[in-house]
Image (cartoon, rainbow, N blue to C red; front, side, top):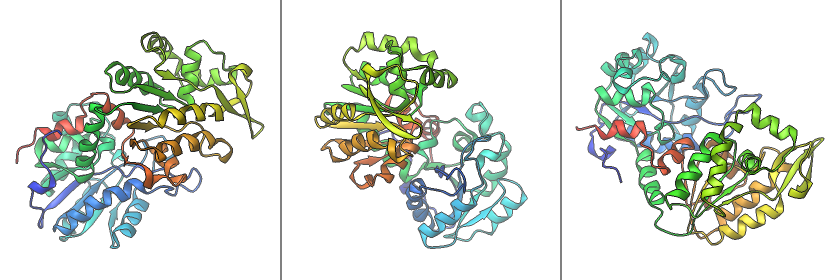
Length: 405
């Protein structure tokens, strides 16, 4: 475990606390209402502890990113948090202007305030060093009002953003409970001491899939990588399988085909270690039809793995001692294409292995299937989870390592 200053090492009584959390939640595409409050609930425990210890808690978080469909204010997040805590949580539609400063100054011990979506500050996501972020308007305006900074956001700690690395440069900083626990648990998984260790990689983050597969197999952490979703299609295509023009065009549109040369190298280096789908659920005029590899190419979109693949994966997962699950096996949002995800996720949940699940869509699918209580550890991070497990230093954690109270 990385040696960090924890919340046990600081007296929060009547202190103003800036806490960076990850409230980024799935929103309904039409109503923009939060559909899964898992992350808010997780951080609520840390926030409650700070409030109970007499802190004046200023909550910094984001929702989506500028230009995305889920970019929104944090007003409903404050209401959801208030319901979870059973006490009012204030909200101000400002970040570090006079309105925000005024609300922060009004806080009394044991109270909490959510300031506006931090990504509405244009400097938040700029590619700058920690020292440069420390000189930003955000940090310069809020630090005079604060006594301590708490980073509780494992899921955002792989980003060198202003609210993550800027404050620790100039303010006493400690690790929050969520981040502390994640680091302890995932350090065990990263060491890969129990075998077999199996990684299940689905979803559509192609830029991560190749590098993750290479690292975990190459370093002996994982014995197998099982692929599904768009990742499964991309890896199949890289192996020379004609998946059909409609599916190839999708990969090209997302610029995923640029990873094909490296994926080809993976199969040369790790023959038999990376498993690919053998059958699929395709969308034929809104209805599911199952096909096999022999039926390819197809003129329809591939939206799920099939039963044969799910069975093969399930049998292998039964042998595992550690399982890392990141990404659904298909378009789980549609009932006709949740089958592959359901079978594989249930196999993970019912396994005797120590299971780690991470990523927004993965968490949403786990909750939808009612499997949350059967997973050994649900990580709040997606990208951060995989970066940590592949040996990368998280900027947010590195910033805390430098602290000396």
